[in-house]
Length: 483
Ligand code: ADQ
Image 1 (cartoon, helix red, strand yellow):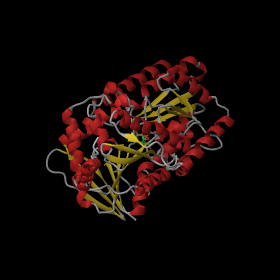
Image 2: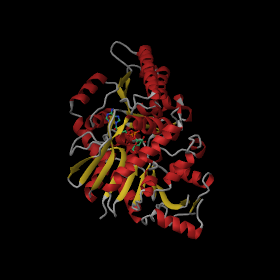
Image 3: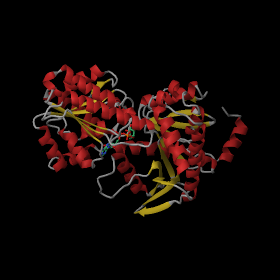
Image 4: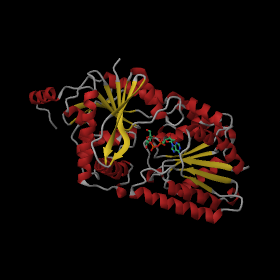
């Protein structure tokens, strides 16, 4: 069996049997343990000076290979092009997009440098799986260094419609770089469609009319290469989350929460503090509910857990201030001596605590403006008590809405729509809650994170290894292909 090499911006800290890692990290780590292999990426360290050195750490059949970034690379590759250009653009926030040509150069330079660090560690039959928007040029850099292994890429965030992608100045270079992979994985069919649309209408490429079977990847011809692409919606391990949730019910955090709630119902959200998550609109829709349904006042509490991320970036400082203003304003308006409507918490919680809190919540309130998938929606459903499940209120712009059709689907900018959905969720009869839950949990079990990983790996293993750069250019000379 080929060794698996995972490449991601950050290498997830896995502690054997520990509770900190998410489903994605665990799912990927399981695959690494099966095949043996390596997880390669940035250590998270930013060096003020000196040359970063790769650090290798063996854990059973898995090697963790991590390396620091110097300050300038961190600023240009991570804060700059990845998070000030690609992240807002791919989440349809062209209004927040900042572009600096030097940052793009830095982004390409760091990708090339990381690829050079990996090359000496590779073996001929390794299969390489690269993750997410930080590493779009990674295969191109490996190919330039002579690597002919199979290389796949999974995009965790949305792929935007062409008209939005065109706002990113080097859009063509990015799509050309993506075409250096052998297999591209997107979260949903609309993301895959958006990519194909760009290839055909902006890059002069073509898509083979129909894959042999509906579940097979489509075949794409562009920039002188042929590659495959498909949607692989990422999942969770629903039964493990349910076990964690049940076990956590007896723990102190949940007992404290239940005592605070008393007989009130709980609406709950968990997100990284990010402008793509629709937090301001969400707070306002909760306010609208209290406005329109006075009977709900002092009968429902809203718990928002939102640990800050990318706190050294202006747009993130701004959203944080805005939310603190909104929660303070709404609490000031409605709070009573024995009731604070919004409980707004910035800290990280361990997975068992989070799962148990999900089980306590009557409503999972997940309303991003855009989200590749949104695992919180899947975790919330997984954690429910089948006998007395809560209701998921879910944005139509989360990738998860493609699968979780048993949720109350809302438009996250329509405050009235969301307030109505909250009211409907809080009063939904048990039979309807159970029917919606059964529908969603069946879907989550059928497409858990192992299925996601195995489908992607199966399709990547089937790809013919790439020709070397020399072979490819000889072939181009023979056929005259170069578009
Ligand atoms: P994220 O944008 O980070 O992921 P999400 O899918 O919701 O969004 O995953 C967040 C994870 O972090 C969840 O597992 C959640 O439980 C955990 N988490 C969040 N807040 C926490 C807290 N306070 N304490 C502990 N854990 C917390 C990106 C894309 C998503 C895509 C995923 C996976 O943006 O769209 O679903 O990758 O592909």
